Amino acid sequence: MGVSFLTPIAALFAVLALVPLTVFLGRRRRARTVRAALRLEATPGRSWVILAVALAAVPVLVGIAAAQPVVTSARTVPERSDAEVFVVVDTSRSMLASAASGEPTRFDRARDEVLALQEELPDIPVGIASFTDRVLPHLFPTVDQRVFRETMSESVGIERPPPSTSFGTNVTTLDALGVVPTLNFFTPRVKKRALVVFTDGDSQPVSSVLSTDFSRKPRIDVTFVHMGNVRDRIYASGVAEAGYVQDPTSGSTLTAAVKATNGRLVEEGNVGEVSAAVREALGSGPTATRRIEGSRRALMPFVALLAAIPLGFVLFRRNL
Image (cartoon, rainbow, N blue to C red; front, side):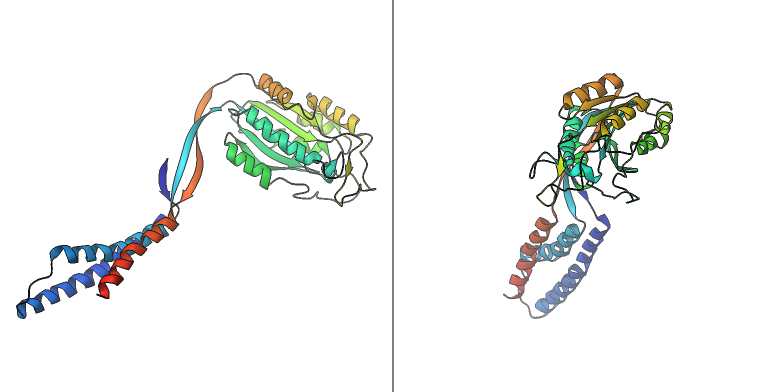
């Protein structure tokens, strides 16, 4: 735990404490001269020292408040330095389907399983991406559970962003996953890589391009988690939408994607099986210590209120 400042340069405001102190000392010197001329007793030393401290404390405390002090907590966690995982969530509109009106959607269940999977792999950096007809990374692999949860809850949503094309009823394509092994989704030095894809399989047919992309080295271990079933419907308005039914070829399309990536297929609700498969694929390896920032507590309101105490004392003395 420690204290840091968000805007440390604002603390320069405290230098203004020299202004009231200079004025105060000048007036005290003049008052002492007048008292000596009139042969009056000098004021007690303690009295003027307290007033001087109060005059200086007001701008000093305001300067500290302006610097925005925060108390931060931190902890250290183990982190695999040779392995990373990416979870990719299907955010196409078909993921809004559910078993009945008011029931959790495929996307809701996928999000819960993603969070549960990360908790099963606390020492392995896990990243987040979403896809429809293209893959969008939201968070690169990390062991920071707080950042992971917030990203999954706040940044990932249905059609955020929407597909690049709206022609046709099925614009999602599993071929889009080919950018994962071809672009820098994983840290280059990391050779043990795993990809977990949460999707309902409603996709354009898989082409040979996907197999070519995933044949690159280093190999990426792939797990597809199948969300939903053929009876699910979209109940966005409270009633089943007549325009959506499960693609009858989604099962074969997903099977083709599994074959193209030399991966595996797991039905939803089996997070333990997925995490066990990922750990087996990644094996063991070196672990480093990673410092993770915890919660932050702002001290600015308390310091600002504290400045009212010396200010009140100065006003009180002035009116005596």
